[in-house]
Length: 278
Image 1 (cartoon, rainbow, N blue to C red):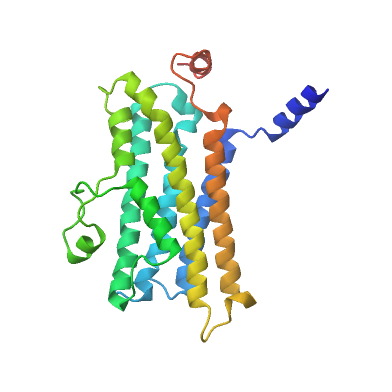
Image 2 (tube, one colour):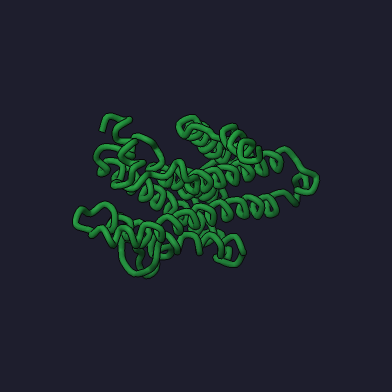
């Protein structure tokens, strides 16, 4: 009886991947729209003049890149159509999405460093900044030089001495290049997945702490205090909760056994190929 109840409850909780993915995509777009609305409506909009409007690019680009786009990249291989047929297009999509997330992150860092340096504000003194830097360092380390980063004074302040992105580069070498041996892919795959999930959750934690920090800094003199919960605080707190939900759902999808891509030589994989006409 207990086993039957467990099976029934499991069936009730079973959600098809594609509707789940559609909901998750809508949630991600909502997060991006909300952070943009927050910065535009309450924080004065956007510019590149070194003012607080330059800072506003930072939360938008970080949420867009290191949370939403990075989460989408992590879920590419959970799409059932990736379980059959050539893997190369999906590998390119996964790598391109992760690289796009990295580029947006670089631009987001440039915005906040530019703002701090223009205003004479110290860099890297808060817990949020330490957590954010640690997240980015998992996605990049200072040993190489990406050729697309312009050598400007601003770039030299942000990227010093040079940058390389080992999580992306290691995944590229292990999974995209055709001559990578199978034993290397099998060895690196769980490491790649673990650090991908870790980076995503650290990104979520950094965004949530950054939203909270910005509200504490902004809602004080001349405004309704944060503790009185003005409309901006309600809106930004809701944004933080939605970002958290997005990250938890992505990690949950990555951990769900039934949504994992079967090994190429497993019976499940052969059944999938037969069902999809492969």
